[in-house]
Image 1 (cartoon, one colour):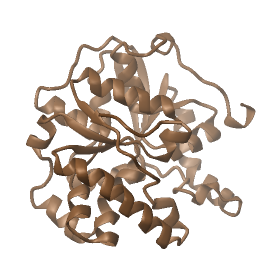
Image 2 (cartoon, helix red, strand yellow):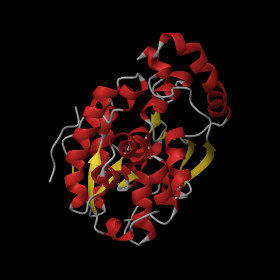
Image 3 (cartoon, rainbow, N blue to C red):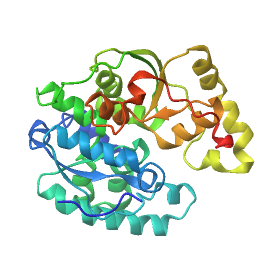
Image 4 (cartoon, rainbow, N blue to C red):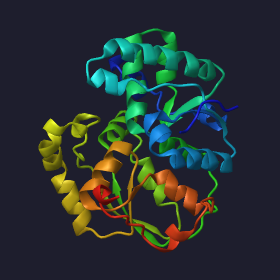
Length: 289
């Protein structure tokens, strides 16, 4: 079943910490609702397509519910009224699937964290709580399948070194769930892939903050240490789960940045081209494109 397009409050934290770390039965059902978010829809549709193909490879049934922006950018600008309208719409659409036994997955750490943390806090009610407790980042979900012996591991050998940057919003989710770093664990399952660096520095984008002209210098100053580490640690690929981080790093280093699902998609032999298996793809600074 597919529709749509590609073009926690304290109580929730306490619930997760008290044992709702991962619902094995929910994972083993292999039924997910995909919240793709604005970045995939408008900027990175190939990630949405790759996600569907990776999930299909693993026998996961995917529903793509009607959805609108999660509401985080609106809340960040004080537009709580319209954000609440979006949150209510998404909760209704996704809630129907959650009741039917679907997990909710996201490829965007910011969307995932906002739905998990703020939907129940701002909306209240049982439905928002149920949706919140069903959210998993895509790599967390796939590593859970692996833990249960349900992840396909017939990967191609890639022989690539990887610099991995952990987005702040993803690290926040991982700290709450106490699940380690599933993205790094997933990448290390691919034969030949060596994750030579794992960085946790903030990229300075901070949602829409870094897009504002008045914040540009400060944003770049925050990112300076990360940019330096990337330049001082030559690798074949740079990987990041967050779309905003991806844009910031590409602009600041002139290197292409890929979502981890893109590498997994390639390792499964699902990509339309195998070029990236044999050579790094550096398009140069975004300003020159």
